[in-house]
Length: 183
Image 1 (cartoon, rainbow, N blue to C red):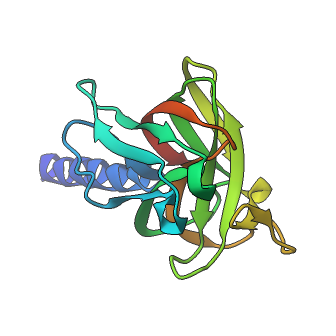
Image 2: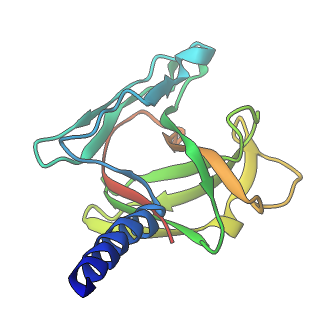
């Protein structure tokens, strides 16, 4: 009898610990995940000619790469992920495990996929694997590159997360992404 109770409790602990520890993972790239939920949005939506792509490399990292062109009033590209609603609860930051190319990127979130604006936080990459910590309450509301006269992010959840590069110059870029986590 005691062995059965122990076995049930052990299995319950494993089951609930998996739920608890996986709740804060927004996306973890690997060779087993699909990228079909990620969408590429280049500046061609406004006449530009920048090009980008997202793939998984042999090590299982997401690779966001491409070429930014400022021709025809362009100059940006992005990838978006409509995640299931991510409740903030006690979480204060988004943690990115990335390896960039010493360029500046933006992390963007939308509390609702229907919102016309995003909350934005710029970050510069070092060229090495690193953890970028993005305080949620420091993410500023923005629409088409302009800061809005609204409060910084203070919602209970978000439904979309994006990476954007648009440094007002022609450039090739390459960003490796391992994981995106709420902490």
